[in-house]
Image (tube, rainbow, N blue to C red; front, side, top):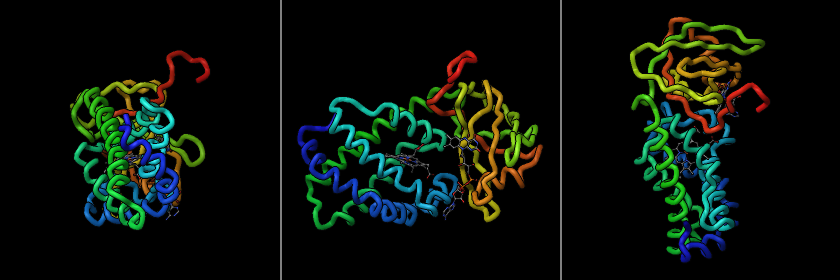
Length: 260
Ligand SMILES: Cc1cc2nc3c(=O)[nH]c(=O)nc-3n(C[C@H](O)[C@H](O)[C@H](O)COP(=O)(O)OP(=O)(O)OC[C@H]3O[C@@H](n4cnc5c(N)ncnc54)[C@H](O)[C@@H]3O)c2cc1C
Ligand code: HEM
């Protein structure tokens, strides 16, 4: 819950911070990747960084979270937090990385708002950041603990690669080692990590087909301008090994065959 001291400060600066997210975001990411270039190899999407469309999701969601705290005291936006936590867990985000993001995000905020920022403003927004980060860390810990294994990535062999309509391909996988397999709930997805022709690793999410359980099958649509789907469609063949995450995703389809 937001402290009584921070609440009026957040209320007074919400519009300003919200209006500056577009400028703060590129500064934040250039600081983050200059200090930690390894985060671009197998974690953050290079396409999202290039196109800028998804770039604002992180900082923008903190401003949205602050709005929620101000408008709905004593509650948290559970659905949004859960969606982010599942996505993070599918990417293997760890608790120490929240401190890294905090440092670079707040350096970018301080630089952008240099003319207006006061210690009180910095303190209030730091409180908002850690309220959100701590909620995500807790959810992510629970998600990791619920898995059948403690591994982030496990190898799966492509058992079948079947065309599934124009520009779509279904991949059916089988375990390539004896790591215990978490049963997936209907509607969940896995992250798939592939190496691109230039050597960089990239991760994308794919929804598991049908009543997945401990089987793993997903259908990908080819995006010619993309990085990962062309590799899956054009380079990955039956017998190849794919690295995939445990299953995540908070939107699960109900049992039965009625409309969802
Ligand atoms: C929870 C979840 C479940 C999903 N399930 C599925 C699924 O079941 N099946 C499926 O096919 N997909 C699914 N997706 C989408 C999937 O994860 C990928 O986003 C998709 O395959 C495209 O990835 P890509 O690497 O091929 O393209 P990306 O490399 O991510 O590129 C995406 C788009 O960005 C554009 N782009 C790249 N660089 C720039 C630039 N400089 N300027 C402007 N635009 C640019 C590209 O042209 C491309 O059109 C899911 C996503 C999520 C989050
Ligand atoms: C309080 C801190 C954080 C917030 C509020 C936050 C918020 C978000 C949001 C809103 C998304 C999009 C989720 C979706 O639409 O499914 C996202 C995705 C993502 N987050 Fe976070 N995040 C935080 C911390 C972190 C940390 C510490 C890391 C790792 C260093 C991280 C890495 C990622 C990555 C890699 C994605 C996938 C999108 C991409 O590749 O560009 N996040 N986050």
